[in-house]
Length: 94
Image 1 (cartoon, one colour):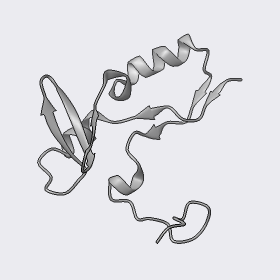
Image 2 (image 1 turned 180 degrees about the horizontal axis):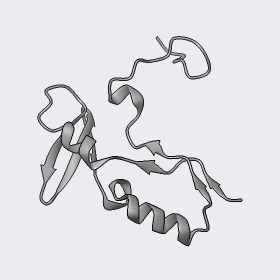
Image 3 (image 1 turned 120 degrees about the horizontal axis):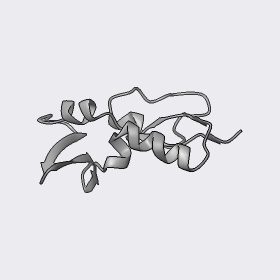
Image 4 (image 1 turned 90 degrees about the horizontal axis):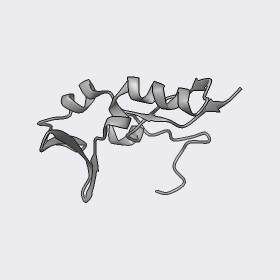
């Protein structure tokens, strides 16, 4: 069994939700698409393979992937999730 444990995905509704925010991350229109401004100086274009679930499923089938564990394309700290203060995911810097 082939398992992909790190395919990024970003919901288009979430991308649209970020539009107009005063705090980062925010989304701006770029031509016919979107760019997520993650942090100052880091702008990530929203590409079809990140937001199109049908394309993601086709690619998984083409690669022979049986199971995919989707990961959010933006790190949790960029979308307002609290940072862990203990445990294996806690930051080691202060």
